[in-house]
Length: 212
Image 1 (tube, rainbow, N blue to C red):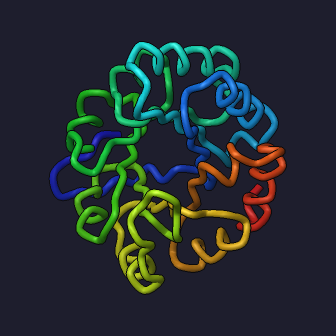
Image 2 (image 1 turned 90 degrees about the vertical axis):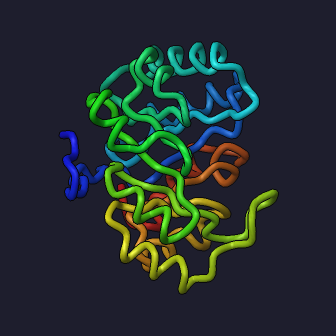
């Protein structure tokens, strides 16, 4: 369903937890496969992100994850690269805030779901043709900008034209707060992939937002 000028996207994602890989290593691949096969498939998405990896490595990683999990499992989203998302038969692409317009991606690659990375209210407003947006940082996170105030996050999220996933510093102790602040779902990196038991950590996040 492509969007025309003046319309907003109505393809709200069914999933409420997006697990983002910290890298494209063999360990992350094994963890992603576990998450994709052991968690409720309708509730989660795996976003593949590694800013230091080559495009060819990301493609190989993405293709292998798709092969190992099949097409009936959770959604697979590729960060930044539309060509890799298409070539690896992923379900969607997460575009950077200053990347190509989501409307252009949907018009030319209608098979893909399109997410947008945002950091303020203006970014969310400009994401109106995407299927969802991440808004970050929700909480303090190492190496990231200062966390948004709760008022900022709540005001921007509740006025967003698309469903918002809270990203940055998300853990079991604040996940429910993100939804109370207007988020459709949560996106997590360290609290899942760096956990001793990633599957149980992800189950805990789903239970904390009462989605399973």
